[in-house]
Structures are given as C-alpha cells and as structure tokens.
Length: 314
Image (tube, rainbow, N blue to C red):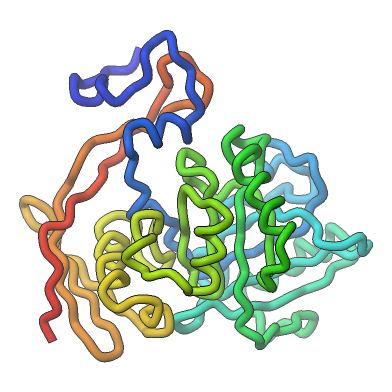
C-alpha cells in the first residue's frame, strides 16, 4: 500500500473509481507545463501495427531503447506508422543543430540496415552519412502519440485526433508515433521544426498552433515545454518568455541559466536581443495515476510550479 499524504489523497480517485489517466488529469486541472522531454534529436522508424508495450519489444527494434545517446546528443527513438506501401523502411531523423530541428530521411531495405544506421548515428552526424537525404524545406510536422498498446488514452484520443487531421488537407506532415510520454495529457504531440510539446489538443487548436494564427498567451497553458530546455523550472521559465515574445521566439537562440534558491528558482533566459528573469517556486504535489485502475493505484507523484514574477531586465 502506498503512503499517501492528506493533500495528495484529495487529488486521487475514490477507491471505487477507475478513470482513465487523462480523464482524471482534467478533473483535477493537472498542469502540463514543464513536463516536456529534453532532447537534441528524434529518430522515427516506420513500423507496421500492432506494436507491443513497450514498442522496443518488437523484434525489429530489439536492442534499442526510448532514449539513446548519439553524435547528435540525447536522442528519442520512436516507432511511427508507415506513410506508404513501399517495401523499404523509412527512417526520419530530426536533429536540432541551431534553434530549430533539421530533417533527414533514410530509406532502408532490411533490419540489418537499421542497426547499421543507428550505429552510424552514434558516431557520425546525419550530414556525413551518404545514404541520408536532407529535407531543406522547413515544413511543419506533427508527431502525434497514438500507441493504444501503451495507454488507452493515446490509442483513443490520439488516434481520433490523427484521423481528424487527415480528413483536412493541412499541408502538415503527420507522424503517428509510439509513446511520447505524458499520456495523462492525451492527446499529446510534438511539433517540428520548433521542438515544442503540447497537451490536451483538439483539431482546431492544433491547426491554429501549426499555422501560428493564435496568440501564444491563449494556448501557452497547453504547452508542455520546449525540448531544448530541461524539464521543470527551465521549461516553465521558457514558456513564460514565449508568452511575452510570441512565435518569433522559436526562431531565436536561447540560453537558459538556472539558480536554485532556498524557496525556488531564479531562471535567466537570454534571447538574441533580450534578457529575462523568471522567479519560480514549487506548487502542488500531484499524482500520475495508473489508467483504469481502482483508486488510480499504483501512482507516481510530481510537482507543479508557480511563477512569482517575469521581468525583462535588458
């Protein structure tokens, strides 16, 4: 039996209830901000359904893991549903060399070729691998979690959102991917080339984000964070500056410096032209429940954050 504090107990489902994790997160107004991955690259490997849980139990992905270290830095490995009936396996690599992610495509003929490519990426960057093709057009892309074998919320809500996006010719490249993390915030997604992660999306909101036709302040509460910042206070501070500067921030280099204080954090963010200071402290301790489990047990805990001040200092 898990030890449960009085405050935490009030945020858990009743012992007789077994809600989905996303339903429960909505019921307690769980804040997704500050929960994004912190990565330098993403490797997407086409893999037909069905996918096991975890997806790396699939024979084609044996020996891989969700996070590997390559020449590009911390690299998230994801399966994605094939985009065509070609017999080759397409591997798409998103790699953040500057403020945005570049895109490379590799077409492979065998499982052995996949492992050769992964091994090559461990020591060499995509531009030095002869079989890769760089896609120079910075086209908007969406990586949408649809893995029902990992979590029912992603399988239902994520898949439905993908279907809605496919019904409309948005001109955006859609990748239906394996577990991105944060299924309690389903539907969850990562946008490219900016490398931001999002929560609780619907088709209209997602379209407005991709087309940049909505004010950042209106949708910042759905931003889990920028993958170029460390999870927690750094991502919270970057989102606050994002709210102030708007979409233009995604085209600017950012340097983030964090100073831990007795009662929180003071985070300095340097953009190309400005310096910002964001003061943050811990908020609620909140549960991440087990989906469809009575009382949500077992569960893990995390902290939300409270922003005390946002100042432009130069």
